Image (cartoon, rainbow, N blue to C red; front, side, top):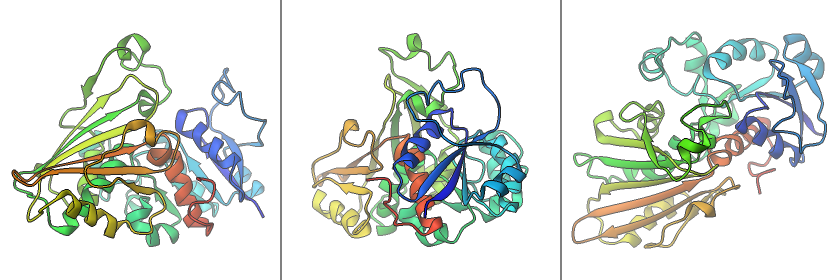
Length: 335
């Protein structure tokens, strides 16, 4: 039997990607939940078949019997909606940064705003299945990870766990993303004339995704240098990660760390030692592709991690989490 799944924010890039995936999911029936009316109602979904809709209200959520609701909304909107959605009995997966951090003080520092739902901040499961699968499966509220932290955490954490990173030397993460990561709302920074034939760094030393990487990888802030860049393309993230390796003799040894850590993981693809992925390899997929290079003479190591920011970095991972929460096969609808 197909479960009814609500999507709030379906007009944005991540929300529309969610609808696209759910339309091909054998156990899900997507419902569009109207949070606000817009004149260009079907601008981004115009190629889709008409879908059932309902107003976003407690009565409608109960009447429609929604098993789960996705929030593809800004953080302040997610904080407003999540409490009463949970009271209806629906599970919630939030794609914003509202519930990703553990304490209000950390949220206030990086998001420059007060957190209004501290009790839910403490309750939410962080939705990176490769690390937190069991907690996600038992959660009623899941905080879908940020796109940059997804790739960075999957690349860095196995190395920190294995104790092969010279933490005194630190880790440098050079991250580049397509413009869809900034959302669909028009802005000068993401306009064609600003982005085309250009490459720019932004939010230097204050990017709000940094604390997610620190939490996932058990790093101190001084051990990680992260810089985000805007690529002149629609989708995709490529992160080049530099560090000094300890007691590693070859790239094959580094590859072995990843191979052991991700054995059996459906959405991690490892490249043989000495080979690294390109952006196009992961576009339109829910995979994270990882490759390593290493110079034994100097101890310099480079890891390249690639994802699609709208799929593994947003909607695809959200559906992966939905599958865990509702007891479906984890890869359902994603391959």
